[in-house]
Length: 279
Image (cartoon, rainbow, N blue to C red; front, side, top):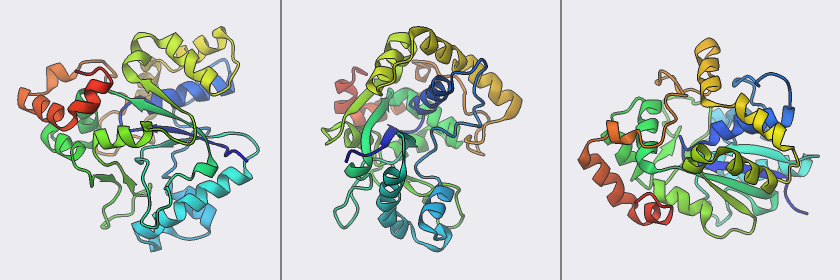
């Protein structure tokens, strides 16, 4: 039996949350925008409370490795119990556990959408999100051991997420898989918005009309999201960042990154950047 989970996968700051807002607006099809703080149709796969509820265990008492060993079973159980498709945002790279199992079980998976963005723009956006200097953020993006929420001196509201390098993350999800993977470039989401979103909507098997797609896009525009965040905040924003929805532009790195940092990113990621037309 095919799995019920559709993964919305990306390296951070690559358009994943924008798409989740669009999808929530499309599926609800109401006459006003969905609140960015009520995206319950697309939770993140690393949510600690979801893990605790599914396992009946307290993840606070487990090591990161012990948690990772249980995560495939959590997703399999959620898939088995689901009556309809589930959409999960995920920042984890597509990795294997020490025992050879995939962190993301194939049997729980229906398909995946992978969002990719120019790492030069990712670096500036991610640095602001993490409140890190550009050089430290870029070093992290080139570190194969880099992970979210991995520090043991505090209890994060999310589980550890291994990101690998930026290139490693992209390749981990976009190499051939035993399930369909639809790649969405952030730049095409911005420059050819309707056609790009309509194509992925059809990939998901959703038959909404052009008018419904356009309405969902209008309700999830950057201006709407930024205004919502200013009025009510955004619970997914890092506590270190001023705003989650900061600029959302293509090419803003040109005004923010020194030449040596640009060269560092290109040196670390040249092959994958060429593959996706970023060089």
